[in-house]
Length: 118
Image (tube, helix red, strand yellow):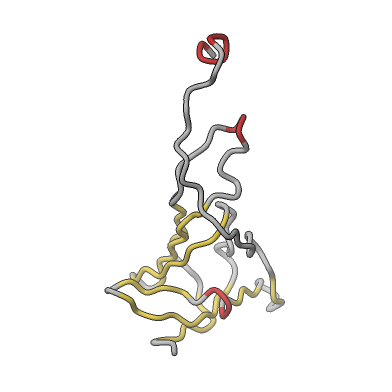
């Protein structure tokens, strides 16, 4: 099922990119919007999609996960993503939830002239 396995490594870079249409803070913001999380490990990029922009790991954590290669992209299998602290204890970070439908509506201008001015 999986094409590779990474065990007990630390990442060099952690990036997050918004994948759904953005929303202003007054409409709930992007806290639960779909984001692409990209980890750079040993010069290679591994990614997964998750709700929210909260990081799943910090610089001092060690990571283990399985990944599969699709069209040249190394996609992390989220169920296998394990994070351990410096002390070696398992930690759960980030938003591990899901939502059945993605946001497709584009944000529109505020309805009142007063809101448009601010």
